Image (tube, rainbow, N blue to C red; front, side, top):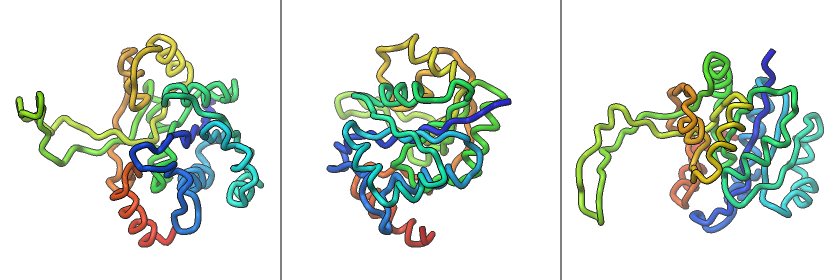
Length: 227
């Protein structure tokens, strides 16, 4: 029987945002709370791992928000690494040996819905992995030195989101096989290793808070959904 671990990535430096946005308060709660709470309530995972910046664990454990979540849930806190791949690997090392599926999610995406978690897990059971993504809606240009070379047909283009769910041993194999590959998501490693990854059409509200405009949009979404 498949058992699932959720790895919530909250170890980013926030260089593009100007601060660690995963700890910024949204409706009175830190951004990381929302995705972690959704995974808890979904009932689709049996292990929760929160990857945080080095030296953040002590402060986090003492916070009332974390205490309230951890009261009924055994949440593992793991220190992140220098890169996203390092943080993911640290999270994978903390996964129970009996768990064979890992669901990786960016803490900076607070509006993930439970059925996308379910869909990615169920799809992963049928193939090597599955990711949430949305079709590209803008016209995409390829450029060289700020001059347009050509327009790319957007009909086959998808914008990757999270969660991204994979068979644990396959992801570990991909990480070990391509240690020097610079990645922006885990699917890149799996693709390079020739694993079969399914796309699941996601939600345009599943935004990643990257810059100040995203933060303003997040406050609107949070207000409308009364999170």
